[in-house]
Image 1: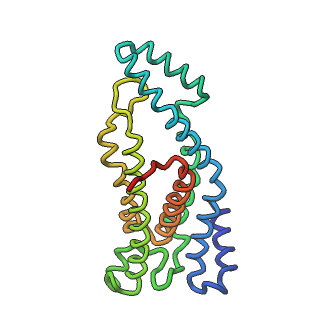
Image 2: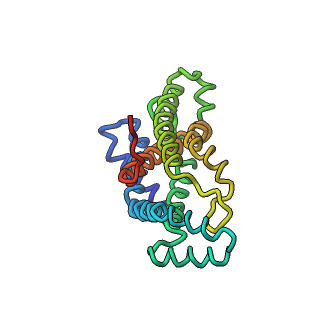
Image 3: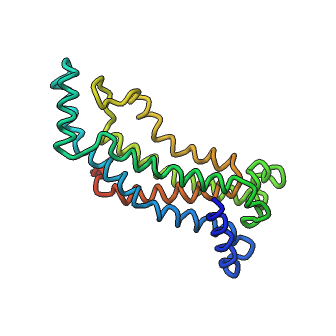
Length: 238
């Protein structure tokens, strides 16, 4: 973590001539993007795994219908299908889990006190939205910084919401009772698209430095997934 903190400090010094008092905020955004770029191969591996599972989804559904009354036969057939298609049942999951430590380290760093004393325009990086509201209100100098972040998050969340709805409509989660079925698939289908708006709550309650990281990382994720899955997007017709 100290390595990343030092990198932020060094980048802030380099960016000082361009960004002046907002150099540390710019360094946070840049470091977040660099880390996301470094773990991009894991994102690609996760996307490949998810695409592979999507490709064999129709065959899995057919097997469940065929062997609905024979769980043992169904399990064997599914294992053979995975082996034949060279698809792991956990394809797409492990690469996502491997990314978690990087996200945790960055969030923990930017949620701490190391960013105190720096600011994004009129908003101190160590403050919260509640501090901005107390000092000048929602439309005060610091409050306007948060409104700008909320606007970015709302745009990204709406984009992600619509895309997730399209994906779930085209490739609904398996609600069956056999192997590979998703428990509570109905509730997940209703709730999952709305999860993109949870970032609004996060930005409102964490320090501004962490909020900058969250907004940058969330925006990166939305663009990255749109590019990685563009070939498998369901077609729309007028």
